[in-house]
Structure formats: structure tokens, C-alpha cells
Amino acid sequence: DPEHFNFIAPYYRQMTFETYSITDKKAGGAAILRAVADACTAFDYYMEHLNNGRPFIIAGFSQGGIMTQMALLHMTDEQYSHLIAAYSMGFQVTEKELAHPHIKPATGADDTGVIVSYNSVESTDTMWDSIEGKAAICINPLNWKTDATPAELVYDGDKATVHVDKEHQVLIVDGLDPDKYDGLGYPLEKGVYHMWDIRFYADAINKNAIHRAELFMK
Image 1 (cartoon, rainbow, N blue to C red):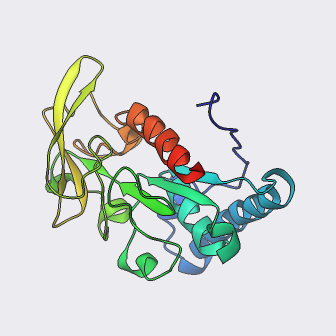
Image 2: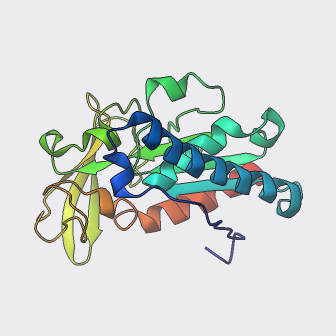
């Protein structure tokens, strides 16, 4: 929301889908590290030249969700003290990441210095293992509940219910036609709503970012 926030989106050498399928772990790992290094370098530049001591939000989707988490791991404690919230959408937060003091899961709509993470699927049978298979946390951005309390989703004239599956820590979206809400050109199985993880909840995320920022400023 440009009325409330400055917006900075740095370039970085992104990983491609082919990167994830590289069987040579050394080569694949090098590609991932290049992307992470670029993102962290961009964050350092922002903090040194553009932030000017202001509170900030970091956010990313899918691969950007990875970079959001890497920025949290990379930043200093002083920098972290100015974090309003981190939105890591469409990528899992594992138990390993939760061990770091900068990665604190959001428990509702009001807490700050936290990470918001979720992944949407039709059912646990359609989970994408590399994206959400080891998820340790999940929050419903429609009602900001971490339990199974359902919320109504209205999108493009369609209605569905969304709730957290506590066992697998994913969002179950019930009531949509998976043929209509497909991979948007990406080779994803039916019922994997990965490409809709921003579209479904964009308004809720925008309002929540403003809300958390206002609370932080108070």
C-alpha cells in the first residue's frame, strides 16, 4: 500500500525451477547460495543507505519466502529490533528455522517482530513436499487463527472455506474448482494452490501489515 509504506524490491539472481531438479547437490547448492547472497547484500544496502532508522516489514512469496527467512537469519539483533513483521508466503518454516531467535511465529493479528507463514492446498493429498512438507507453523491470514477455526474466502465470485490443518501445518482451501485455480502455467498438480497464495489473501495481508505497523509505531 503506497499510501502507508515505501516499497523496495531489489533484483537478485533467482533460482529457476530447473535449479530445484539439479541432482548434483554441489551445483544446486551453489545456485541457491548465490540467490541468498544477493538478497542479503540487497538487505544490507537498504539498511545502510535507505532505511534511515525506520521500522520495516520484509515480505516474499515462494522463493521470495525463502529470501525473507534468510534475511531474518542474516540481520543483526539491532536491525531485528526494528522489524514490524516478516511475511514468508508460500514457503514453509521448519523446526530448524524456529530455533533461531529472529524467527518467532505469529500467533494472531497483533503481534510484532514475528513471521507470518502459510501454504494453501486443496487437501493434504495435494501437498507439495518441497514447499510445505516440513512446515512447523501456519496461520490463517483470513482470521489470523493458528487453530482449525475456518474462515470464508471470497475470490473472483467463488466462495470457499479456509482452515489450518494442525497436523501438517498447511491451509486447507475447501470448495474451489482446482481446474480453475491451477498452476498458472507452472507444472503443479491439481489442488496445489501455491500460485494463489498471494492472490487469495492479498487484501487481508495488506490490511494486516498496516495494522501491525500502526501497533508497532505506538
